[in-house]
Length: 145
Image (tube, rainbow, N blue to C red):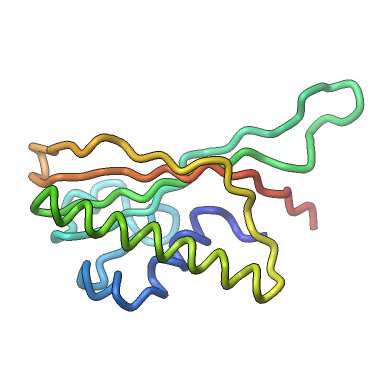
């Protein structure tokens, strides 16, 4: 199975309406963006991040690690106005849901969604811009191959 941040990145970059809304400025810290670059990205933009994982092992009696991980990946949306952030967040959620549905229809392994959470809408005075972060929390089978 693909990593969660890769699935989300593919979902966002394959959505034509979303790509148009952000001028194709969708980047991922795992694939192409150095630590200093996100602050220099023109607005609006989306930054996909891998926020880590935790193995689902509940006991060490039988196995060292369980066969699945709880994984979190985030989508940060930066824009000039709160209204634009909210509009782009809605497009992101739709793009991810549609992509996961398409993966399922094609018989691909998909992550098991536990929750989607959004941070409060905030102002970043350093960039400067408004931003909100969506966090996807999923269970993913470990690929031992």
